[in-house]
Amino acid sequence: MTQDGRHATQPYRVRAGSVWYWVDPTVPREAIRPGDTVVAYPACGEAVVAALQRPPGGGTLAFASPQGERFEVAARDIAALHLAAVDDVQ
Image 1 (cartoon, rainbow, N blue to C red):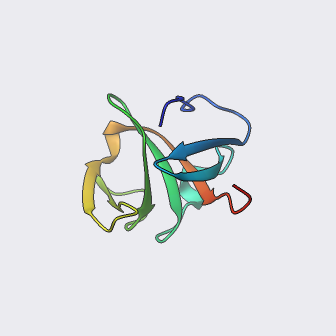
Image 2 (image 1 turned 45 degrees about the vertical axis):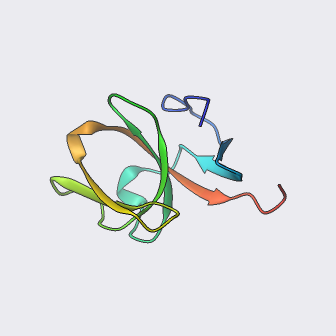
């Protein structure tokens, strides 16, 4: 992903690999549920597109990459979490 949308206030599109996503930064973190695709912006480092596996609110957030790789990140290390969906038009 080449553009940093962590401070976005309006929906935007990003490309991760060969897939385009519509991203909605206006959805509150508390409204994002397990199974939702998100763009996670870490406090340091590059954003990733992943499916949320464990809801926000705990000490860690669990994710699965589009390739199925599972990983966890401390909630305090996520600067922004934006709801995303595949852009079927692209």
